[in-house]
Length: 235
Picture 1 (spheres, rainbow, N blue to C red):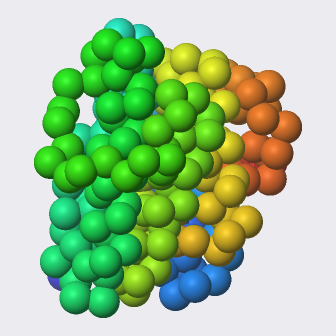
Picture 2 (picture 1 turned 180 degrees about the horizontal axis):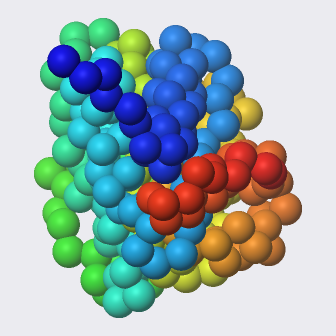
């Protein structure tokens, strides 16, 4: 039987795969970890990689959600249904029942507080909103408050929440800034919430313009077509 030799392009993608898995495991076990945004031109396989990472994470000890950004959708409208399902799963863990319940109330407050601003929010969260919790109608502050509650629930459940976002270049600039702010705050609080995204290369500049600390919060591995040997990890 012949030994199988892996193509260089696939080997580079496996290096990236190991890097993602290592970051997720660090986060899950209470150690600091940077998020990742895979960048590359159209057609290089960013979505396929993101799907692979999502499915592998979904079978691990970490919780994960996957969403697709779109020009026609607001960030809250795509996040709320996914976070709702993740929190329902966490609420099934006895140790996290109380904190997941509070996070679900925060999610209900978040959805109702922002519905006037983002008319594409459709889901109704069947939990009584908690007054004063993620309900100011300001995306930046409310998303941060929501992520703190979600991070507390994940910590109580002895897990991590990994948010996979494809096509991040479609997230509107102020909404991108709110997302980065929320992730930055949970990182400061050592709460186990992390983003793994994929986008066209301009996302790096847009993220830095939205929040100057985005360069410290994420790695931006750049992938090339499969006939290339390169994954660029420069930051």
